[in-house]
Amino acid sequence: MRIGELARITGATTRALRYYEERGLLGPGRGENGYRDYGPEAVVRVRNIRRLLEAGLTSDDIRELGACLDRDLDHEPACRDAVERYERRLAAVERRIDALVDVHRSLREQLEQLRARR
Image 1 (tube, rainbow, N blue to C red):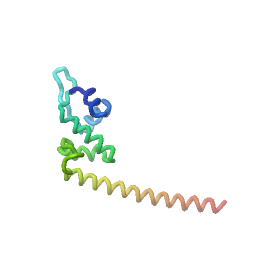
Image 2: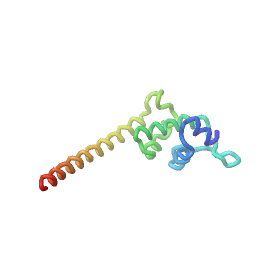
Image 3: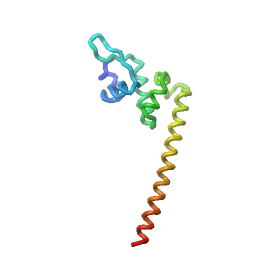
Image 4: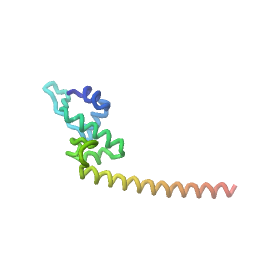
């Protein structure tokens, strides 16, 4: 199928599909005419990519999942690599939250001090 049809079926934009290709997440074949040619398995892969991006994983995280992307991640048993990747991303997000809480606390304290001096 061509890029427009894959976009229509998956709800992704053609621009997003080209980005996934650029990032090594999606690899279409090429027809004799040079146009991108996607097989039916690309539908599952694109849906997985979109789901994982929405969940907070980066394109680098997703690329490392490799063959897991070709499985229906919503309905098949969890892919071990996906679980590990989620755990690492969650830990990174929690570290960022902790750092932001520290910044928030510091800003609030500084603001209170500034207001007390007025």
